[in-house]
Amino acid sequence: MAAAAIVSCGKENGSKLPPPPDGGDDNGSGEETSLTVYGKVADESGKPFPGVVITDGRNFAVTGEDGTYRFEKYRYASFLQCSIPSEAVIGTGGTYNLATGHYKRLSSSTKEYDFIYARQPAEKNFRILTLGDPQVGSSSQVSRYTQTAVPDVRQYVINSSNMRSYAITLGDNVNNEWGLLPDIARVLGQMGLPVFGTIGNHDYEFPKSGDAEARKKYEDVFGPSNFSFNRGDVHIVVFDNVLHGGSASGDYDQGYEEWQYEWLQKDLSYVPKDKSIFMTVHIPLKDNRIFQLLSQYSSAVVACGHTHKLENTYDKTVNGKTITICAAGSTGAPWKGLILSDGCQRGYKVYEYENNSVKRELYKSIQYEEPFQMRMFRTTDFAPFTTPGGNNYTFPYRGANWIAVNVFNYRPGWQVSLWEDGVKTSSSPSVTPSFDVWVKMFLYNNYNRDNDIGVNTHILFFQLKNASASSIKVVAEDAYGASYTCDKFTTAEDIPDYND
Figure (tube, rainbow, N blue to C red):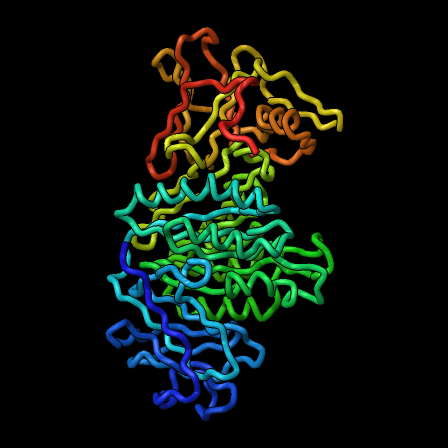
């Protein structure tokens, strides 16, 4: 890994550096006012980074050929943000050892803010890990996350040290326990790679007077809730799509304020159309205005949290472009063993980029190696299961010749085949929305979790030619050519490897 970036602190008004000339954008007449901020984006030797976008979340500037910028900031802005260029190293540091370099906190006594980075060739290959919903609600859950997620991510990064890795949480870093925000931030800072944060509905404090007040404790730890940076030919945007009223836990909806959309629109306006967009939000995205913006680029991926299950069914086609949208969580059902409500292990999505395209995508289960991508069941092992609360769980296809396969990261287009005694007997599974009955039994019997969350579209059903075959396996090939095999049945007596 390259050396960490060095980011200078904002200089006080007594700095000897004179205010630089107009840096580019939204600077009005160029006359200095009490709200004027300025500075330079450069490497450690002083060589400038031209064309870098600087914003306070409302107003924008672009660095000139000499790396300087200057503009009048929004009166109530809290942060000055730099959309880190691809040629700048993103390091870790600060109080929590999280990703650095994408923002500075504004001070009324400071006008000059320099962003200084180590320089690197723009990455053509890199990896993004998306960490859905840590959602810790107690110190013991912080410890569990530390014991499970941290060593898994650290080892995964070590194993792929030939490719730089970055991580972004997908919101709900805590579960309405805002005093734990510093604790989960410190845990994320132990993962051995730069980690950025996305805000979720449970990160908003209540009761508060509105959205801005409610997100303050989150921003005190993680910084701005809307920002961007660049890696290779990919522009990465972290966007707050939780519109919170601040009165109670449920006082929120998917949405944003108009100034946020204007910020996003302006931010993307600086990005060449042959680049790709990688965006994180908390709630699965459904907003047509944002889809229109994203459809202008070579490709777009939107990673979401919130659902506590892994789903690839939110894709949207706009102007002939398919915007890939995935929801995934790492807390599960929540915090009921190392398992999600749809039968996946807790884990994280991994996106590997080459130039401006995803060349590989997978779901990495915590405490399992990459090839673990599915579980297989004989449906006769699972009688219809009805809880005292009246929820019914059953596989829709039952009988001695039927098997169910939960292919965690499945999406239409995968080639999934059944093999009996070494012979391929089917490549046409039935894809029927279903509960994973095994996990529903586990969650109810161990945690009395009686709810119907977890129906999904990544359970596939095959009808065997020979129910007595001595060897049965399912082979799944994803859209990128990677092949995964499952040749062992999970039974009703099997339980996950780790329980809270």
